[in-house]
Image (tube, rainbow, N blue to C red):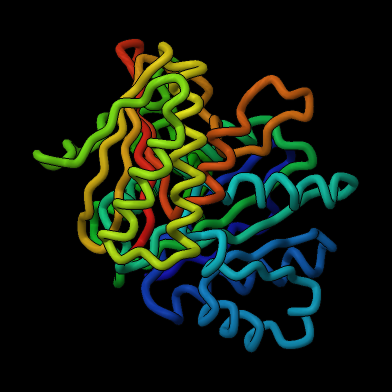
Length: 316
């Protein structure tokens, strides 16, 4: 059963709302009223959904579609770590608006377990990034209950303070905010035994690039994504030497049509938005993780006071 968008919207801050719908009819019932309300109110609105869903929305909206900005999900959405910067840029472009709206389609069918985990992390971190949004920002995130596993829907309930058609979730409900004391504490699945490895040492970055290139060639990765992965791994290796205790370890393996490179060191990441926003122009760090996020299809982080593991994956 579909649920339509709630009239009105936030009076301040960030309303992050999960739309739990069923099938095409449910998707349209939950999104079209939301977009028509935005058009009537003059609210700038950005929509990031699949190309097929964007066509549906344009058709249903008719002339009102001209008042909606569409950003295709196929480009930035493979790696969800890139999307926070897109929403931030949208906000900056309309800083004088009374209210902003958005529709962001998150986990679609066919995503791997690693991809889903990062999509859920992205959804959770949106609550941190826009905690005091100005102008107010209302973001609707559609989840198809017919196409997605029950666990994905359950996670949507945990990462959204609001559900479409309802009020704010009461304390003790399904919603779980990010633990800012350990934003990367959730462990990653164990790497396979026998994964190829290379120590990372000062002055050894040529070896890091050569190792990654060899792994990409062996896996059959195309030249352009291979070059991107080499850049990403290089940047994280440099971070290991500079900020992770002066050395690290690089591992690589293939898994379910992915080439995975893992860098581990003795550093500790505590900024929950690390790598998701462009680095400051003052040059005080953050460029390496940001560059890696832009270059690879998926970036995963596990970090505690005992050390950090960063996985950079490219789809084969």
